[in-house]
Length: 392
Image 1 (cartoon, rainbow, N blue to C red):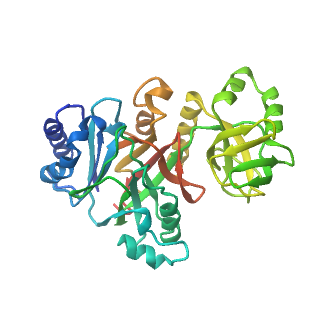
Image 2 (image 1 turned 45 degrees about the vertical axis):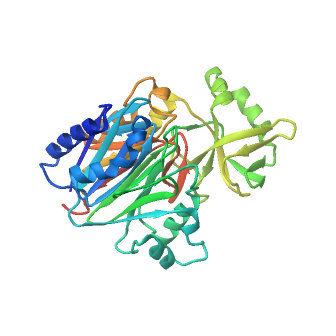
Image 3 (image 1 turned 30 degrees about the horizontal axis):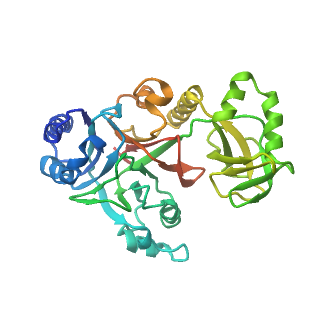
């Protein structure tokens, strides 16, 4: 297994492609890649239609996937708000690749069996497939697709993001382009995909039980209005956290009830999207259930950096059987320079933990990755996919 990643900031499309080809060919030793994933900033919008053919003609990958992006990651570098084009490519001996494009109306229902998903996507259930998914946020809610993939393809990793160009999105799939729906690639065979999802939050206060809720409205925790609980918590916090509570408050929902102590990574982080002071209730960006364990969380640059370092340290401690060959990063467009005050923070963190491996990706309008054994769409998250061979 051999991976390569390159980024160009040339403003003319053909020059950018030529620069990428030179770099990727050098890294791959002139070998033809089986897989290529491309991300193009809005600067190249007038040339989006040409990109699949250009990549195919220059590199001849067996499979090509990609999308438009507000910020682009390639060669371990992150470029936001400026012209940039990146390609990450791989030679994947012993790996079978399957591609698909779906619209919402194409998806099986949850009453259909796993075979319906395999037929719709053209992806067999064995050997275990791993998925890279890219979707247009304006025409495709990925929730149904993610639930279906978890249902039909248990044990496989699912990662990706929502395209994020400012003026309309384009999805790339082989030599085709799409302006709606989702595109994906499934990888099966001699490949393992490890995922790291850094949600960038830390808990405050104690875990609480939902004792009354309706859909996404949190009505009671521990038999008290959540606003009342927050007011009591506010009084106990230091000044810095009081300020953060006013602008970056989130709710963590425990991914399992079968434990007494919770740690970072045990909660699915969701936004607090509204509050009714008079009724004492909160609106949360997730459908809630009575009996769930929840805990309030805060986010800032320092917390996000610490959370990512913790997740990377945990991954290193697992000591995978084979070393990583390459990685993809799907990062929220609210992270990067705007959060940390400098570029390349999350890319540098990965390479500091795992060594200098080829890394590409983009800044998303929503990130896809697993938390607690299920795949979710996230915000303010960095979702990594780390690729390595099952056997040497």
